[in-house]
Image 1 (spheres, rainbow, N blue to C red):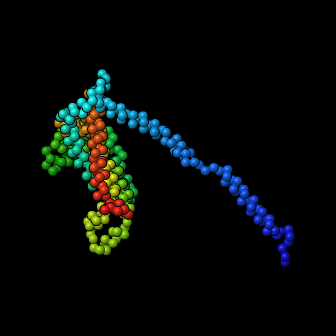
Image 2: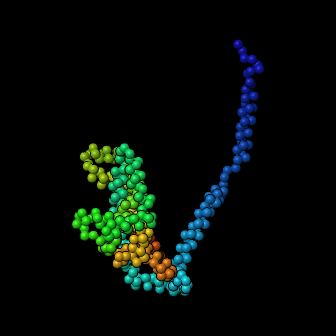
Image 3: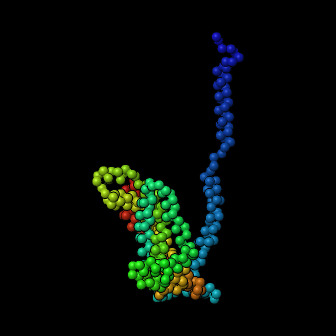
Length: 330
């Protein structure tokens, strides 16, 4: 049967409808104006205004003000005058400066390596497939959430005080007692142990890095007869070197800035016998006990300079020590 004239649309009508629809789409596209680059930047800066204001008011402004104070003999109550570099020359002649630098460096050199070794060891255990692994990961990370609080520092001080649990435990091995608190030779080890106990943050970063190492590398090495130690040295460490560098950098900077536990345990005097007189504790004592804000600002900016130099040295060394997969590391 032939198609009815009422149901068969002529080709001309189809073409006319398609042309009309095309024209309508063009008109709709013309009405939508593309967002300009200037508009995108304006929107971005608008959302950044609160952050910019906060940084200028609470970070950049106080830093510039403290830099100016470092060149004055400003007293918190009496005021002061511009004295140039006298604060810096007096700082190097101050016997407390050498003591504070020594205590801080000893802590950095002990706490950072032990903390990173512990965090890497635990991270390697927690990346294995075991039942209840999520619980263990949370349990090992939890101390990092509370360890730097005032309450934990007080508990830590009581734990290592004379006659405390630490003395009772060490007496089983012939320890004469006295606690870490009252012994200037070992008091800093108490703070090192507290730092090692809080390995949760670097542990999580190590876990993320370990999970990114291709399993084919371990399988190929195992087929070639490489043992666990050789696989760790020649595969895990090189592939993990960017993560190791990041953790070393961050933990070193944090170690230089330690204040809370040292202040709670040793006080502003850094007792006993200045064995816990950290650089930051000395800055606090100068600023808020002696009220010598100008002199304390000079100490603070010297710490900023020292941390900056250490960071620069570490970045220079990383060029030869850190391996990035897919890049020319020669």
